[in-house]
Image (cartoon, rainbow, N blue to C red; front, side, top):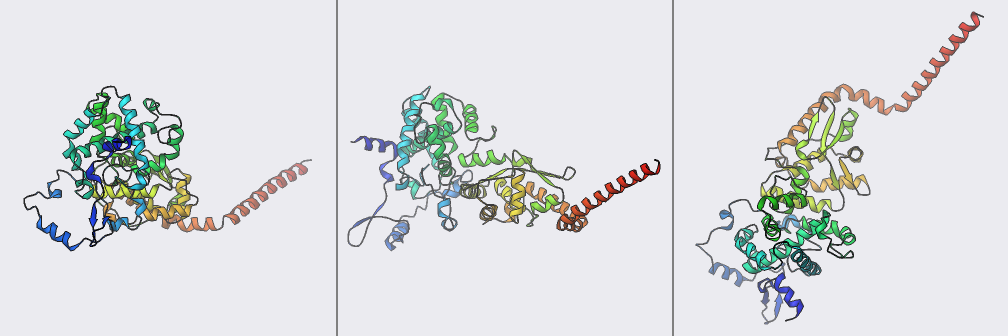
Length: 449
C-alpha cells in the first residue's frame, strides 16, 4: 500500500466512492446528479420499503441543524451555497475541486496530535467520537451523502475535519500554540493564512459545510483534558461568540457572535423610511455591539444599530446564515437585522448616510453595489420572518417620522433647495449690518468733533 493510499484510510472509507451504474451496453459510468432515475430503481425502492422503520424527521429530538438546501433555492446562485476550497462534513466530501485541501487537513492533524498534552495518537479521539456517532449522524439529513458512510469512517471524517477547523480558527485568533507551522505554510502560516482567510472562511460558513459543535468540544476534551465548560469557553473565544452560548456548529456560533443571543419574537410592518430623510429630521445613527442593543431614542434623536460589513463575501455568508436561521427555528435575529437595515435604504444617499456614521462598512467600489447587495439579501423573505425587536424600533421610527415630517419637511425642503440663496442673502445682510454700524459710528464721531 502506498503512502497516498494510507492517507486515504483516514480521509475516507470505501463506501464513500462514487456510485457506478451499468448502462444497457454493459459500460460502467459514474452516476451524475442530473441523471433521471431508471424505472427499475423506482421498482426496487418500492420492493424494499421499511414498514417498521421510524420516520427520520419524526424521530428527531430537536430541529435538524445541518441540512441540504433545496435545489430551487440554490438554482438562483449555486456558487453562494457550495464550497470552492474546502469540504467540511459529508455533503461535499470527495468533490475533485476540493481535493487539494485534503493534504492540508492531514498536516493539521499531525500538528494537532504532536502538540496535544494528553493524547498524541488517533485512537482516543476516534473512540470518543464513535461513542456519540449516532448523535453526530442525526445532525445531518438522511441522504446518499450520509448513508454511504459506515460509523468508523464517519468518525474519521469528523476527526479530520474537526481538527482542521480548530487549527484554522486558532491561527485566525493568533493562538501561540499554532506557531509550530512554517512561516511559508500556505494555509496555517501568517502570510498564507491572511491571503486565504476570506476564501476559506466563506466555505466554513456554508450551511451544508458544517460539523456538529460536539465534535469540536469532544476533540478539545480528549486533547487537553478540558471539561465540557472549559471546552465551551475555548470554542466561544475561537468563534467570537457569547461565552454563555453553546451553539450547534460554526455557522450558528457566527450568527450569535454577530448579533448576540436572543429569543424568538413575532412579525413587522412592511414599510420603509430612508436613512437620508431621518438625517434631515436631525436623527443620527450610533454604532452598538449586538443586535440586542438596537433601540431608537427619540429624546436624543439617535438610532442605535450594530454595524454590517458588506463585501464580496457578504452574499454567500448571509444566504447560508439566513437559510439556517429560518429553517432551524433557533431565532430570527439575522433575518430581522437585514430587514431593519433594508428598511433604511431606498437609494445611494441612504447608503452614504449609513456609511458615514459607521453602520455600513463597505469595501465595494460604489454605493450602487451596496444597494444591489441589500436587494439580494432580502430576497425570499417576508415580514413574518422578522421579530418584535426590529418591529418595535421600526414602528417607533415610523411614528416619529410621520409626526415630524408634516411639521418640518416643507420648510426643510425649501431650505435645502435654496441654501445658496440663503447663504448669499445672509452674507449681504451681514455686510449691510456691518456697514450700517460703521456708518453710525463714524457719523457720531464727526458730529462730536
